[in-house]
Length: 429
Image (cartoon, rainbow, N blue to C red; front, side, top):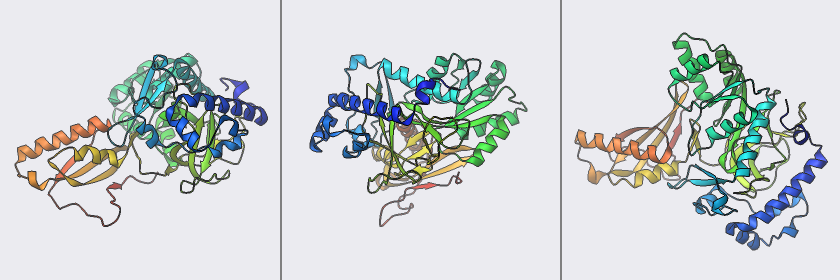
């Protein structure tokens, strides 16, 4: 059950020595990034200032907005000729966050995925169907290359066409699937409608959105799999940053590659093991885009107890966000993105509301938009054209299908304080 047993079971003292060595190398490499040169100089931080792992608290945090401000290549620490792939994540004002990878980065990333999959008993004899988005988001390609590194047969089916997905599972003898838990639930219902079983399945790897123990039990019953939780984000390579082992009580984060902190999101102070707060991560092995104390916005905690598998301290399942980001079908969406799109359309007014529902286990987003009073003619053809245009612009910006409803000027709620434009009506999970 080990991909690299020596690394995965290092003694704490040896692990800390390796972390510190890699942290010092990261600090050296970070000098190639203008943002960090200025930030560290302003804070009076030199390489010699960091003498222990605990000295990490002297370094200022890096926030997602910093990465957006560096668009497109401002956080790359190597020449562009060494970048062999880029991925992007959602941006709040139309511009995404760009993440770059060297060849070595991709090799390390796929190696981490191989660790995760091996840890839960997946081998080269398995058949793996990857039912997540292949594209600028990191969801698909990370697991794809990790599975190939193990040597298993990989089916890059991506998203959509559920009946065809089910046919492939049965026709190809798929044993392991990777998708969002909500899509897995939908898939089980489609299989039921088709009156077909999925007898070959053994393992389900689910992530990109929060899910609960009750959802786990339902998925295992309906699909006949053992279900495991996966956590990741593109800024830290992508999916597979942390993963459940067979104990399935918290997720192992690979401490040889990531230095982990939990902080109070308001004060920035470090919290003790067992205290829930914001997850902050310093990647220790990234070449193209090293980061220091990156605030993920995800709420978790470092678990106090050890693990029988000897892979070190775990983080608890992600329970929420410390910011206003929404996760819809595995895609990150900020309300400010929606606002940015709508304000560029002259026929649209200044008010809008967003409603998130879960229908047939899939997330659906509806945007109610006030029409600009100066453009309100009432002609049905014009309204239909405007509605179609808004749907198109939102899809281009969010890479997500939305339902748009046009409403009369002045009909949406007004707010005296901070506007509450998002109503999440999904059941608590």
